[in-house]
Image (cartoon, rainbow, N blue to C red; front, side):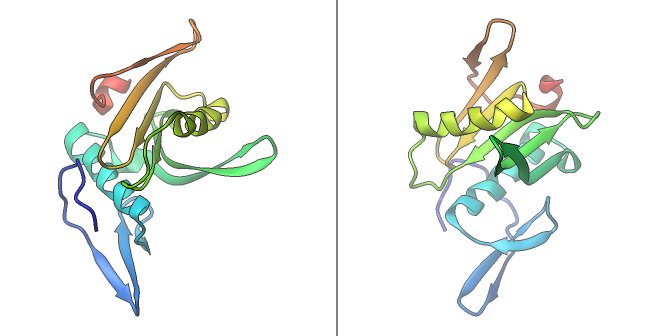
Length: 150
């Protein structure tokens, strides 16, 4: 796969004929190894190992209803009361992070109303904190630790 701007981890990959699968530590099963999934697994491990995010308080492929349609957030991070605090949107390394990506994650946030939005293609990562009082946001220089979220 691709070299990413994220720390390496002990990747578990299996093959079923021509298809490769990667173990998702959150869903506790092997899933199709796509470029986006490669980014997701690296980023989840980064959040857990480097930023102290508990794996038990993260969920992948979180389904929500938006304007009557089913959508899926790539990863949602919860606080200890199981309130959503962060939405993470992943793209393949070949996909540029554009306004369109931020528009997508912002639409998901209309439903979940989290405090932080993170977007990553494995090479470039953006994190912003939402300020609902001023109806604005601030881009942060780094991904906060889990304790900083609370």
